[in-house]
Length: 472
Image (cartoon, rainbow, N blue to C red):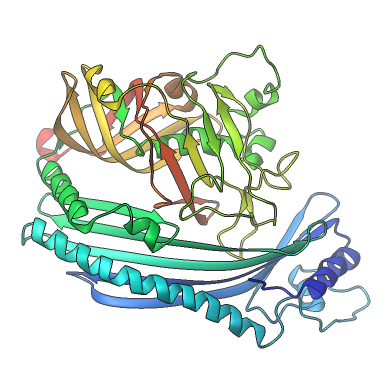
């Protein structure tokens, strides 16, 4: 889909450079629709549809200063209004009425294309959500409350800059969130994919319901997490947030360029063949926006650059970073923005850890005592120090090489270098979340995908989020 008039967009970026003295300019246009479906004991049943469209312009000045502005809609951005939006009007007061976005009438056809895709996905999603609600209702007690939210999104975008021609992309995604609220427990599950067929092909409503009920029972009788340093085993897929936080965020190009990352000095030595691994030699991690299809994958980034893989860690050695046009020597196709209202930043997309050689069951058997993490809910890292905190919503104790009592709401605290150097087992399995989670940075939320095998850290600090009053 094309959302920009090519010739008008070329004139626009040329005019901005000429009139405002910039050395590089871009115009980014998008149109998107998000359909949200709810089924719940508390919220009832409803469907809503939200549309958004607009144009973002960015100008890089000779001193490196960046100006950015945006306008709503796809037919209103002229040379003159663009210059005004960047807070510097034309020196001679002249104005142009040539719009960079679509001429009147063409926007309707773009909307029809998005609507057609959304409608087809809705027809497939609605019966699945209904079947899932029925299956969970049969499995769980009557005193539980169920909420299901499903969201379908479709975004069309176009981009043109001083040195790149007009390119476009269409990005799609579907995500289902299940919340089961029962006495003494709350279970949340999220699944995502690029489209409904991709999502449904991997999941049966009855099997999903059974797994959710098993988790509810575990959490209803879960113990308070122990405090101390333990071996921690992350289930396949669940360790993705660990890698996302403790490796990925430290290798985003703007932090590296400002030397605000713990890994900045390691990247300066990346060409040396004699350097020793900083992390466990078991770890090889890359980010490829096209390597994992899902909610968050793309063909071109938000600066119009083709998506391509970027090696982050090679056998424990820091090997590279994710970069955009202005924060690295060469873009890696990782410039991303939440919407046309935001300037792009170098961000992760689809982060994957190469599989190891250990059987997951063997990893458990080789762990006499420790903690097993079923699901990581959120995380935070200080890029300069590498210190991080992860919230594990669900876990189990490991005793005698077996999974035993459930635990919930754990905090896992560590340091990126120390903790990841302590990875001593890596499974030969692999699991992806399909883009079920979003990453928020600088106020911008974007979908990201992680794919991880089972992973064990030999020793890391664990404690409960809160201590019940009767146990103090």
